[in-house]
Image (cartoon, rainbow, N blue to C red; front, top):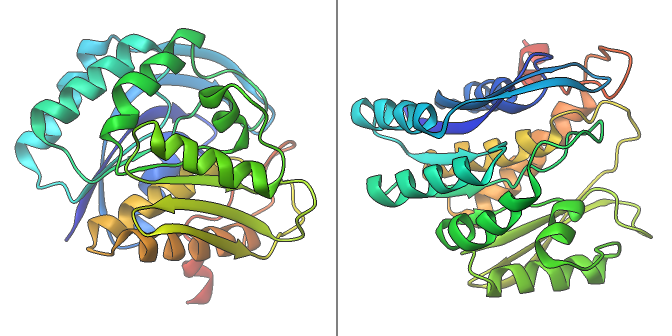
Length: 264
């Protein structure tokens, strides 16, 4: 059975972070392992508390997993601080962990900050050059680049510039681009540019969608898919997870990660 590692924060509401990643791995036939970076007290309405783990504790978890499992892919999510970003980058380099999916989680769906401002520079300097693929949403792309990403043309430019800045490939997630009826993601990679379009589903069940897409890409890569096929598969999986959302919570609800169970 193929194995993947997620390095991310814990979401007590179960819709994002480590919980979403592990459910996504399992849904796509990959055994999931984890290194927790922070513990968040949150639900569909927002984040009420964040406790960040020491960087040494994050490194110890990564080392323990890598010493005993053959990892087909690694995905990073909420890293919280510059110190943890550096610790993760050090471990990735030292252990030769690849392919690496970097989801630069900065803000929760509710709008609560999940990354310190100084950590943005650490992402640019340390993790982006190690990333097989970087998966920012438009707000994260804006933070990394310093200019607004609102339209499809903006997203295309952002993907190209972030790739030029060092990432192996970049997928700008454009779920809310102005003027687009579909949910359009823009990939910039060695082969050039590709647009991924999917039906835009009108819903409030969007909590953890970024985590889910990035972990789905990692799962497909761990199973041997090439990058473009991994993104295509992940996009299809997320669309159905949104379509089958259970309608839980009073705010931005979770998606149904194990939606295939509804087909049994």
